[in-house]
Image 1: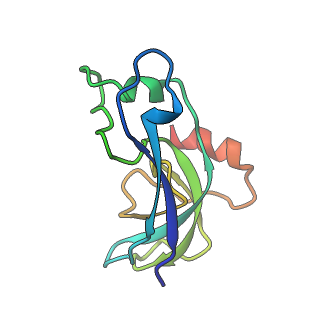
Image 2: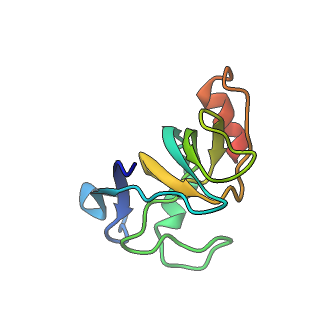
Length: 127
């Protein structure tokens, strides 16, 4: 089932401190997982200093976030639909999902963790 997905996207490259006009809030439908993918409902985002550097257009150790792209960030969420073996519904998983409510993932950079673990602790695993 497709569900609404709220996202935060980079609208402009900040000059100085980021301002509200440098981001946009977008809502669209979450896609369905294809073979080898799953859907994650994001429960907790990691807001880190390096996010500011990813907003710049300059050269860095990681590609900058493009204008109009979902803001990159680590997150932890719960699998809500899966077409990938080893990724069962209700698994708690950290990964670089970005600033979404929900997203489709192919499991790259994702690990399954203990669902009893506190979310902030799980975010440290995603780093």
